[in-house]
Each structure stands twice: as structure tokens, then as C-alpha cells.
Image (cartoon, rainbow, N blue to C red; front, side, top):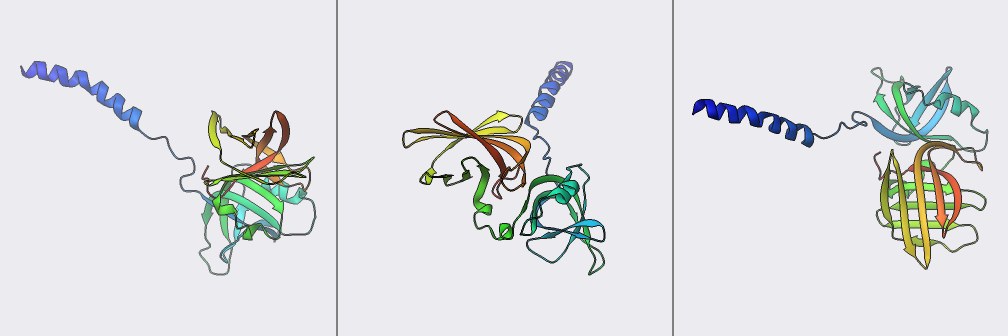
Length: 223
């Protein structure tokens, strides 16, 4: 009888093991990393990041080869501070008055701007996208999508998000007798109007007409 119970127990072990493996959660690729927005400045031959909030500065170490250092050097010399939205591993300085370090992992956005740190909509947005010729802009968040187009009235719309795979997704809506879609994919993208660099490629489709542009995740999305 004991032998029979042992056989049953051993027979069930692979099942339990399989269930444990199946229920295990995938590792969080952002674990231990922090996303911050701030200003980039050059100091003593190094690129230094100053967050929008706080006084601590961080020397940028581009451990993920994002080309941020070269991109900052190539950014058009226009009015405004050099704003950056980055994710990385931040280490504060141990000696007061000196700079810490950030091991950079992800560049979300790089642009000339004097107001990006004070953007009142950033924390509520999940996705921002824009394009040119004619100009258009989409801001999406938990309360819906705002579509702005040159020469057209602004539209506030509900939407449905669909994941396509490989980090790609779409936001779509049927409203005001129009079929509107925003397609987004992980892809380095340069804005043709101001030279800003964003980490998403975007397509706006309105009733089948396609306009291309760039995009980035807002503060309400932790990808």
C-alpha cells in the first residue's frame, strides 16, 4: 500500500512542477531601474543629467549603447534647454557636492525645450504621438484620446487598445462617423520639424488616410 502511494506521489510531482513553472511570472526588465526627466548639460568633457526635481546631478554612462551622447552633440542648436527622458540605474554621489552616475538603459525622448519639465499632461498620458505635413498630435490616457490636427477641430475620443506583438500596439476608435487609428511600434524616430528624437514610430490613420510621425510613452505607462 505504501509502495502504491509512493508511486502516485512521484507520478504527480511532474504535474506540480509543471504548474509551478506555468504560474511563474516573467522577470520585470525594468526592475531596479528608474525613469526620470531632466536637463542634459556638458561639464568637464562629460554629459551630465540634472533631473527636473532635486539638486543631485548624474554623469551619464551609456551602458546600453543608446547613442545618447552623440545625439546630444548632434541636436540642432535652437533656443531652449536640452531635455531628456531616460531610464537607468541611478547612483547618488557619496561625497556632497559631487555628481552621481546613471547607467543609461533607455532613451525615451531628447529635444530642445524650456517647458517640458513643467508639462502638466505628462503624468496622466500613456502615449503621445505627433507628425507633420500637416501637423497632428495625439495624447492618450485613462480618460480617452485627444486628437489635434492642423485646420481641424480638436476631438476628444474614447479608444480601444490592441497589442500586436513585439512591443507594437494600436489605439482605435469609431466616433463622429470617422474611423481613427494610431499605430505605434518601438523604433528610433526623428521629428522632421524640430529634430527631436523619440523612441516610437507612429502612424495616424483617419478614414484610411495615413500620416507618419514619432511618439513616446507618457508618465502613466511603465514600459
